[in-house]
Length: 516
Image 1: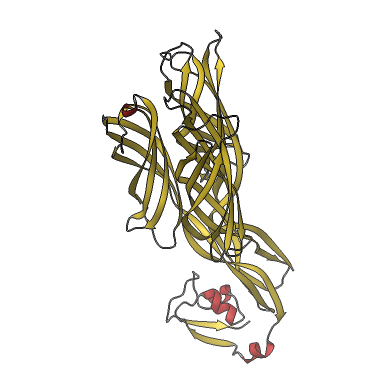
Image 2: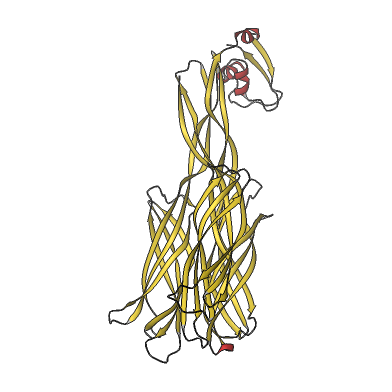
């Protein structure tokens, strides 16, 4: 006797949640930098380096990257900047988690506040959000067939399931060179440089993935000509990055996500030797997840008229794709400037989106989130000095999911498609954002696989005690297979004796069974 087996690789969703934690750190100004007189701009992002499963909890290691622009004199004409990284380790309680589980985490910087303690020290406080899922890794060998066993009868089943074919992390590097706007003077010294990403899409093709989006660059600088005011500009630079992946197929479902880790922006001379070119290097983390359909032909049950066969089963979960869609919503709000702040001119607007809560609804999934916005502007109240303000705009959106029910598991990845800010007057700004919500939803079905079959001698006393011919009345939930197995005969023999053309039986039906 020989068992033919197939390796099953699968993930079962155990837990999904959203939580927040705080970071608190103090930063000393290096000796090579000027004293701080006034903070101007603050920017940060969170990078997850590692997520490790433990018993009833998991560990998240990551880094908070920050950039700080400040004035070094009371007149606001001398600037300096700080940038750095603050590592963190956070433990998240998650009952039922095992060390072999897979942890998927997406982080967002929900708030970051920087305050001066004195001219050489600042305090940094951050609120970091974690959207996480705990998945159980199911790896086992299932019996598909049995060979060389006399008298064996086998019942097979064909299952169709959506399987996670590929899951990996990869670093991507995007490099672009662009020219500054023609109406701007040559760059002498860069005061501030920042970048955000909008309109990200990941498409799957045969042998590769294609990531596209826009790099939104914001630069503040001094010009070569003396006496000119501070200059600034924004650029939207489209990018396209091909990721070679042999296992990728065009018809696969992608749950892949890319997130910006670090970037570098430097000034380069053009062909005339003038500093008018911008070299951009952006480092992304790509979380590649590709799903594909898999047909499984597995042994469901087995018996023999010559030996007792006792199959050893295990249950497993099959996923079926319910929805793969990109829902879009518009978020609009009018914000008021606080205190002595008055807008002379808007220089730049950047945004990020985070999900605070999701819940099943009558039509699908209700998403509650926040668009965090940072506006850089010239402050009229301080004679046109550079200033910035941050505003959180809450939103609520219901994603329609036909066939939504309690056993549906889903993931939602939010990102900004576009964001704009317009002055209504010196104290009011209208912010408009387009938000995309990439949703991937699965239904989950429980199935049973045979792991092994134990053989024991047949119970001859029980078999002999049975009459040779049996009159049987079909009960509820009976199957022809189950009846044949119980009475040491075959489905074909019962069908022949009762002149049946199909394997179906109905409650109350009378059958004649001839024992072999």
